[in-house]
Image 1 (cartoon, rainbow, N blue to C red):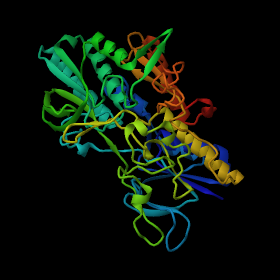
Image 2: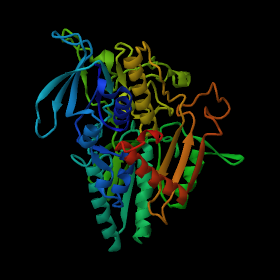
Image 3: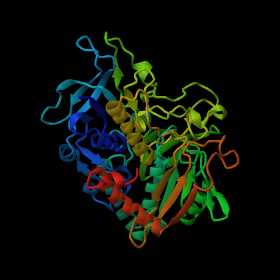
Image 4: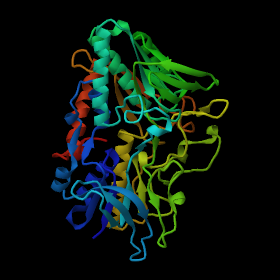
Length: 487
């Protein structure tokens, strides 16, 4: 019997677990280790954050699904990998600390034949002094509880606006190296939509603050959309949308400190600026969760398995070279760790080889460089590909990975909400192929296939996004024929 241990139960880890168990059946064991008892459909947290969706609509308990699917669940936090085993056994192992209230604080060493690291990110609020809802002065929509608090704060701002007092709302990213600009964009437009719905928009200034070099960059270097027989850049597309909603955008910015009611930020031209606010939702940068690694003798080998960011090294080209020399071929295909062939890293947990957007810095070296997004659709595709590879290794003895999911090959579709409501909602539907531009295949179209890189906005896209929320919750709950729903 083979045992596959999966660290993390987000989109990539949960997808991998379901596909692995479906293929491996009862003869082999799939173990999921996650510190959280619930699964969260994170894209819909923005609707919780404006008070338009209850938090129980974006989460559900994992244990019942895993019991039904005969997947072993350990509510615990992984703290250390031992890919070569220890003095007792050469079999790989992971050390965990239980977060389950019934076993809180207990430790265990879990042996594995194959390991998938899908731990996701650590929300690095402390990277910017004053950032975050716990020890800082800003709100967040990164978790359901964060989103609930953001909705409460937003409701208070709306009540203040109704008294006639003006308010400044700043929404964006809270560090020069943040990712997930798309989520900040969505929340900004949903907030603006709610202000209009409440009849207080004219007394509110809504500002989008971002590390993107221009609007529409989204950490992927921007896009050039095909719209019928013409083409339009995502920058021009987004600028038009911001003008339509009378929203201000501050780009090329690295937030350096936040005081009560005041954001300090620097821009790539070296200027130092401040922005007052009454309400601010700024996303944090990400780091790896802090896993350590040890060889069989107990020597620390963390640096050989993990990048300095804390994310796992996989089959990517991590050679340092100028931005213009990076290519789509540098990106991983199989997500296999090069030193330990039975260990894989997927989703946000793998270390990207380089940025997709061109990185910049202030004259004195403060980075203004969006990190590559690798959530949602790409994460699910990675989880499925690695699950199929491992099941082929277990069932067929395949010596090498049999499935790939390179961001340099795969397409991605994103539907970004710009306001919710079955009659008044809108969303921006965008697609691109590939995610990482490939200038060798598409030298004249900014590295992407013009037929598959498109953008449109309207009410119909909102209906599709709401439908996808229901479909992906259905899939994550592993209801009948769940596997037919695409990643």
